[in-house]
Image (cartoon, rainbow, N blue to C red; front, side):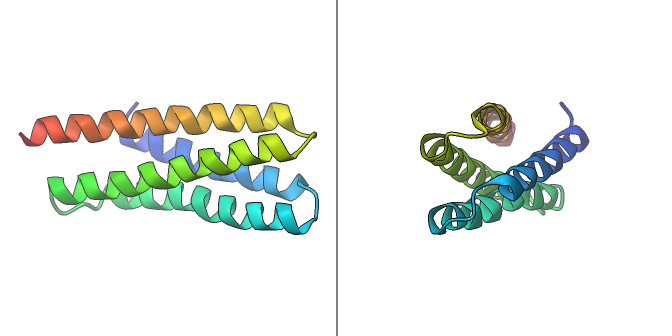
Length: 118
């Protein structure tokens, strides 16, 4: 997968999460989770866009690490949602799977960038 494809994939992931957030119950608990998940998932797509503007290999790796952390945070909040809700489990599982795939790609990219740097 090239960087443009991953850029589009992270954007689609953000849009899919936003769709999920629109259909969650309107309670204090879900609002708290929505807020955190919304920030993390938008950060995945936004920060991946910034990766292409890295000024050095160290900067490139550092920017990818931010994406890794935000993606991991998304996974955490999706797991919480899975345990807190009785509805939309299929959609949440699909989003969890996508988040884990994106995370694996980012981690592999970090390893590759570190190896190329040496």
